Image (cartoon, rainbow, N blue to C red; front, side, top):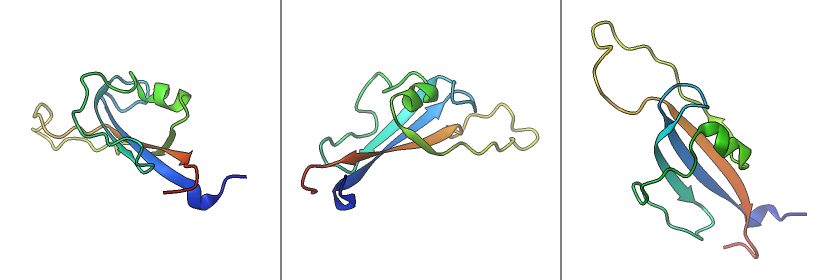
Length: 98
């Protein structure tokens, strides 16, 4: 049995080009509570997964999906923040804890 004190959370934030999990990844951030890696935003030119579904298939658990907020009238074609944000997590066992 896994000791709960030896579980650490890894977080993956994917920004997709559409509101569906099968949309293409256009931006991402990773955070590693195991401290095995120290990823930073923009530390690679290729996304960790091509789609959100691919992250699910690799064992990431979806904990928050993008809110679907319509643009204000007259602002439909303005460029702003990346709005299709999905937050995933993995709980990873760390030998002996950290």
